[in-house]
Picture 1 (cartoon, rainbow, N blue to C red):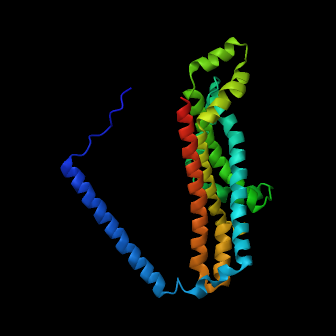
Picture 2 (tube, rainbow, N blue to C red):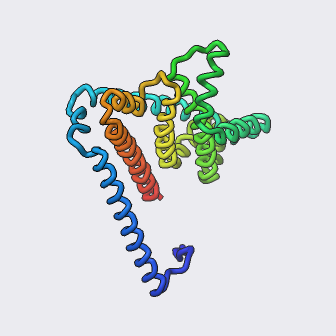
Picture 3 (tube, rainbow, N blue to C red):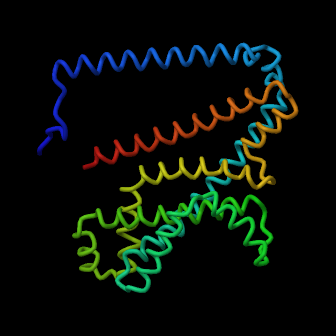
Length: 268
């Protein structure tokens, strides 16, 4: 197996230059951080009075409720996109051209439309069609439309990455094309693409913050904004806590995706 790098290793002069650039970058970041902290301190961002509201249980309860609503919408959107994405991936691999072309059009359209535009579509157009849904379902439907297109392509890629002998063995055992897909190929494809599916969960979770434009869904960003409006000196602090919560969950999901990827590589 060829393990040679795809680029030339830097020589002594290039290594010294890289070390100098690294030191300069760290110095610039340290200076920028110093001025940011000094500016925030001058405006009272680190005063005890600005952080005092976060000693109240009701404040953390409101932030927790907002975070729970983000997680609830993300889980619902991901489950729906997994369900419809599997059918979409199956359609992308269909031998019937009309089915394959329709699934490809759906995938390309909803994979290229921004989630915010889909959210405006669901919240403005669906009620005019006689579907007065809640803001929760407007958000979930928008996330599911986008994520289903991504999951469908992941399922297609996962099935195509499997050895051809899997489908041939299923046909030899008397499985139909449908049985071969849903009983043999699809489970293996989902396992093979599980790191990418977990990474997609990160995108769906971050997409739940767009519910802020709806005005009626109480997510973490809105709860932080409401707290900042009630405690006028704590708006920045509430937003920082919300950002940290999002970062911790996204980092945890990214680490989970990396762990699954390492485990899958050890199997082969």
